[in-house]
Image 1 (cartoon, rainbow, N blue to C red):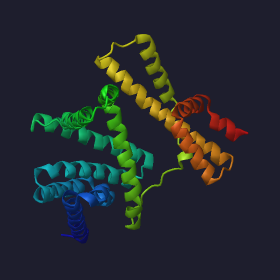
Image 2: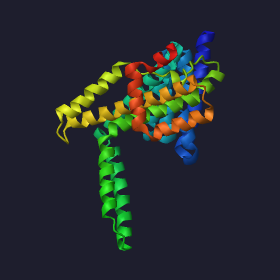
Image 3: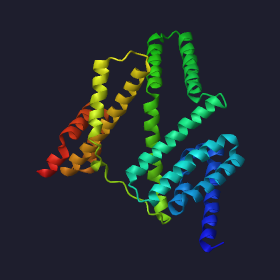
Image 4: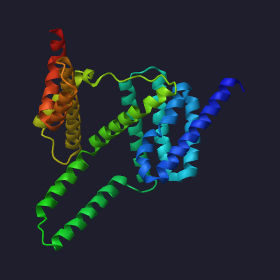
Length: 310
């Protein structure tokens, strides 16, 4: 066995052991697990940034075996999800892809893991995590309502608001899932890339948020979805209506992101102080309908190019 192969195996064993320690803490120390969960991807990121996908897959296989020993069968999904996402992330680092591309692909890989594992939990184990979540929430709410009713408090209006909110959450679940995964991957990259850099992994850097601009095609997708919702008038409760609402909300969130990016760009252009920049950005989040309109105008009329040209 040559020196390179020995080094690869040794580093793989060390990083697998590191993953095992992180998983052990995540499974058995609930308080710290909130923090350590964000670093489960790090061993796979470091290894796959240096070595081939084949070698990285072998490491994931070893990590799956270790996770089964540490936490039983229910720890295996974590090893699969973080392992495959870490491989994708590390491989793209190796290929010198941009940080935005890494974020998008990593989010997609992790999302596929979540969906596949959710389907397996229903088919194989007959456990519907989402249904269980809503059942627990409803039972807790009903207990609270009963307690207030016994105390003579009128809860009819509260129950109506609760029902509407639960219906809205259930309706927008796909959009919430996608954006939650994207935020999770953004945080994961933000905390792991600096560590990987210290370990001599050549990781890319994000361009400033003010330079973020969505593709122009996004505004056309948004207009098509809006027109479909207005003219097509999809029947409530149908899969078509369900899809249109989720697409509309997702695209509106992207427009808000575009608007916030423009606020940062404008503040930098006008040399605002950091305090003013933070204040206006917070206001932009709070008054998000106006921020969404600003994002649409910026994307549709190239406001940044017009400002930069002056």
